[in-house]
Length: 255
Image 1: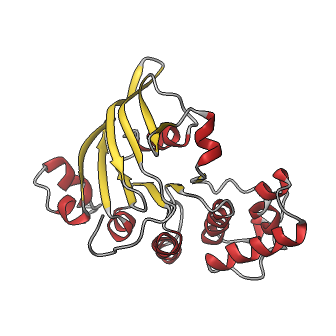
Image 2: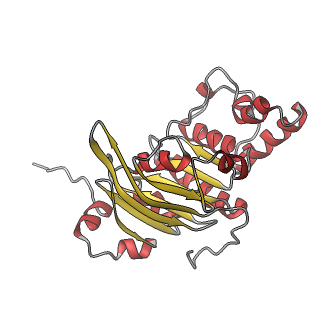
């Protein structure tokens, strides 16, 4: 874990991916992925579009079944029902996946409401607490279409925090955001990790986000792990493919 941001790994769970392979329509997407994520770590999976990083994330949360290999959460296979019951896993989807017919408060408290695990007044208190944790106050009565893109992403994070996750997964959390909103989300990921000590796995092609939040980064290209290392190790890699990716910039020709 990075010496730059030491923390106690309270509540966070280790994740291990072993030899993961997945094909769609006979086309290999994941080609033997193996990696380990430490408890309480912010682990970033970075790569170009189509590299397989989002498919990897869906396997870790249990939304996809591998053709070969396995994923272990705290040493137990992810497909075991006991894992979902014993360990609290949550995902912040790229789109936010908020329900447009529900208010912000209803979206954030949906899990608690559906499971009837707490009385309404307690759910309302928890909703306010989690929204405040991501820097949002007095928005419970608003609907998603009344919010900016950055606010929607923060509401989605608040909804994930309701279950007090031990493993929190982010799929392209800064996609389609303006630069200022992207910076806000970046800060939220770091601050929440320091407060909750959950294990965080972030999938992104956003280089600024990756280097700002990560304890370690896995570079994935064409369904394979190219390198795993600290941000400094990734930046210092002599692999020309990695250097092209992390330093890529669009420079239009001028006439």
